[in-house]
Amino acid sequence: MRSDAGRLWASREQPFPPAAEEAGACRTVDGDDLRELCQAIAQQESIAEMAVTL
Image 1 (tube, rainbow, N blue to C red):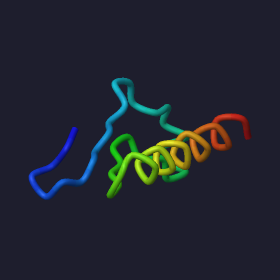
Image 2: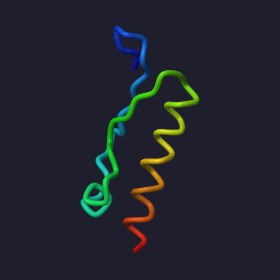
Image 3: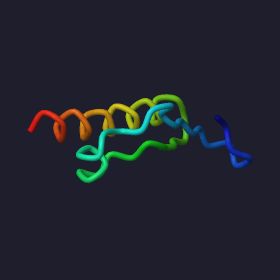
């Protein structure tokens, strides 16, 4: 999605598991451009993966 201010937003269709959310994984992220948005998504997925595998 693109905001009125021009920022890009993405939100997961499925919530993260509770352990991932407790570790700080956010379901919705934003970025100034596509590269920044992809980095934000990857960071949240990494947080979630580490939390679930512990």
